[in-house]
Amino acid sequence: SGGDGVIYYSRGPVKLMARAKSKAENDYYLENFPTSACVLDLNRCAFVFNDIETLLAALDLFVNKIKHYQSGNIIGVVRDKNTFKQFTANPDYADIKLNVLISGKTNNIIGEVQFLLKAMKTFKDSAHNLYSIQRQKEFYDNSVTQILPILMDEKKQLFVAANMSDTKGLSKLMVVLNKTEQFLMQIDEGSNESILLNMCVFDAFKGVQFLSSVVSAPLFVDRLFLRNRYNNTPIDSVIQHLHHSSGQTMKFLFSIPSVRERCLATMNSKYRILWWLFRSCDASLFDYVTSDLLLLSKQEIVAVIQHTYDDTEEDDKDQKHMNPRHRLKYQESMISIALRKNEEIMYRFISLVGLAQFVELLFVCDRRNMNAVEACIRSQNLNALKYVLSFDCVKECFIPSQLNWDRIFRLLVWVLCKSKNDAFLDETFSALEWDTKEILGYFIDRYRYSVQPAQQRESKAGKRKWMEYHNYLLITQLVRDQSLERVQKVLGLMDESVFVEMLLESDGWNKNALEYAICENKTDLISFILSFDTVKNECANNKDILWRIVYWLNDEAVNQNTIKVVC
Image (cartoon, rainbow, N blue to C red):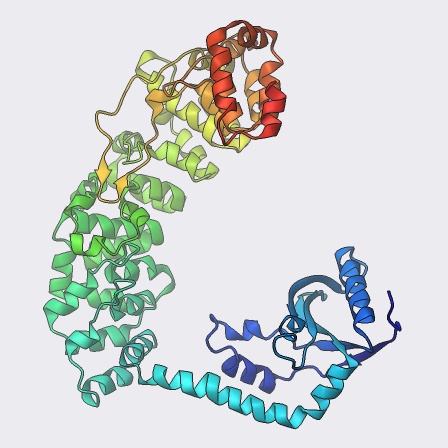
């Protein structure tokens, strides 16, 4: 390539702990934790070249060897840095550095390989003393001058002291800097959080106890129930993290009469506590909090479980900071959460409400128009689905009869169309002992869901996407959401003539299966649908259907490959 082909190899010493620690603390202090992850040159070497042509040729060879796994323990390039790019604008030391992944017997590490010119190495060696001075200047410019303002930032001092449960630091802010309780309990504008939230997350009992002693009771309690942008309060957080904490903070907070009264003031406030208990705790902790700390009776717990959480009762001043998708967090039913958790929690749930009430709650829809059985499938929890379908009283709800048609249709939407895991389809048909051909033939052949929602609930976050079963046809949803393999599996379970007849039937949005396949650019499904002579002839001879196909082919989302397959 025009170069002399000479390469000098130089192996650098392994970077010791002291130097690595210094680099992490001084060079990367502004990076995200852990800053030690930015130190990528613990193991390093250099290739030195007389001319740029040989350097580029060697670099190309080196990278290609790694790419084709011909470089021993070096198995990948994770980062590259080319300082020659700045050389023309600012002539200075320049090289090319590759951070490479080196495989080991048990773990991998990242090392550094330098590609540099001999002239640059000579310059670097001769300028080493100046480099040391320059590093000291960089330390001052990049560390001292930037850290000092942080150390002088009283708000940062407050949140650091709180996160470390440093009661001395909090006392210093009040005594030495003469700060008031309003300063201690200030609300961060971005997150809408006070220092209490992280204290409750990390079970900082001493810090919480200190704040309760120096802050007025109304302000302290108000901050305990302040909702952040994720719709969590410090009280929510202390329960959420109860399973890996000592529980001291929660026990202390619930021992304060005004806190306990606020927890039990409304059905919404009680609902949030039980919601987090079902989500985060085991059965023994659930009993401890509800019976020993909050003194809730079984009847009260059942009433809360049956309650529908209403976000319109919440304070607007909190909601304006909130991430919109978190405003409806508590719309998920408790029975769905209990099913997701474990059998122990599920047993506790059934023991509280009774089996009959349990079955009734299974089919209560949340604000997404989804019941608990459907939520099991949506969350891909096969064990929960098996558990639910193991009850004879639940199976009776899916016996093919006019009373159960809509319930069966909804279940088929999920196991056939929404879940991509065949295990859910197989488990459902096996547990319910359906006649597969009869069930699929009936529901795919023009069955329409009979219940239309009178009004879709609207939250302050805007309309939530509902499961609009009244607009669904199984065949159109199947083609829209599933792969060719699933469609072929369903066809193998039913009468082909019924399946083919429905391929051009329109759903509630006036789209048929072929049009969904076109809009989704599913070329394999388009070919499969058009492989049936009945469908192909209908498309060729029916002007209305042909016009609809042409209409969708002109949609900007449809690609050229799809157009070729259809035409």
